[in-house]
Amino acid sequence: MKISRFRRRWVTVGGCAVVLAVGLAACSSSSGGSGGTRPAATGSVAVSRYTTPLKGICPSTVVIQSNWWPGLPDGYLYQLFGPNPTINASKNRVDGPLGGTGVTLELRAGGPATGFQSVTSLLAQDDNILAGYVGTDEAVQASGSQPTVAVFAPYEKSPLALMWGNPAWNFTSVAEVRRSGATVLASASGTAFPDAFIREGLLTKSQVDTSYQGAPDRFVAADGKIVQQAFVTNEPYLLQHDVKAWDKPVKYLLLQKEYPVYISTLAVRRDKVSADRACLAKLVPLLQRAQRDYVANPGPTNQLLLKVVSTLHTGGFTLSAGLLEYGDATQKNLGLISDGSDGVLGSFDPARVQKLIGRLVPVFTAKGSKPKPGLTAADLVTNEFLDKTVALK
Image 1 (cartoon, rainbow, N blue to C red):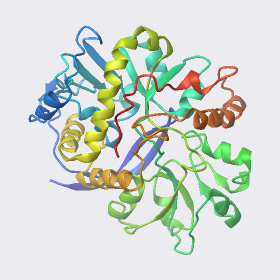
Image 2: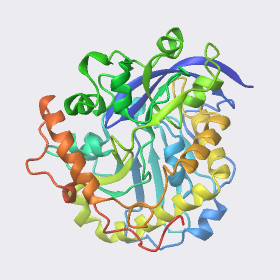
Image 3: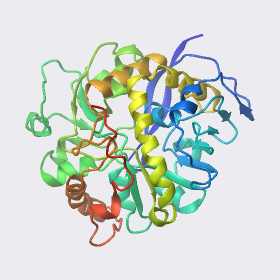
């Protein structure tokens, strides 16, 4: 049975939680048990495709911590599951064979599932977690106290965007938004981009309204004559299909050019780079291949994602097949998942990271954080473990 209703949803950007009230479509009923629940077999392909031996090299259970409930950014990890992973609703995690590698993969939900703790703090607290989702901005902010090193970039381009509904506006840059004088509705705690843009003169302080808490009512009441932060893989679809008071397309401007953070990178605690070097050298190429395979054929893995979300106790957060299909098509068409500047899937551009460090350190310092003195790209990212032969093209 399919139902539509507004639910409060939290997303994490740069390690900060932002509440979004969105229309969500529940596409399946929840089995809802507190113990382990097994979905139909979906991973026979994984057993034959991901066969690099990891037993005795990696931990017997490879634990990865996400920053939200399972969804589109997790597709490549769910791609790795062998048949019949166990959905543990009481612990908000899914575990099962990591392909045919001989070890178990455990994926842990984040955000509300962990009391909105940042992934960097969870990595610091729990030695059982091998890796977790850490964006560039969170990594910069936490570099002084909870340092992490990203080993894989699932997204080459960020889906962070500004969107609007006024058909008379056709913004092609943030500077054009500034010159228009349009109000920019953003979250006070969601991401560093508003502060960075104000500091650099890309936006004026007077036009930025940081009271945004995610509800679509302000956007609808203004008849779309307001610029609002969004993820291009999410809000445009929801406004058109699930927010009946709007029920039409919106326009958007990707912020990749002006704010090219790497989002949801897979990062490890700094000390684990050395301690788990042999494991990472075998595991990261599997992640690259899984991402390539997911992009090519997301359907089977999306079915698993829908089953997982309908089983976990998510407090109203749901996925729909339509949203996943839209997200997959959008990130493919816009090249959000694409080869890095060196032609390798999942790689980092050190120069890009260094420029971001130069922009973000003053922002976080002004907010009271203490990034590592003399922070460099080498402190935050590495391409050491990538298979240089894996590419989308």
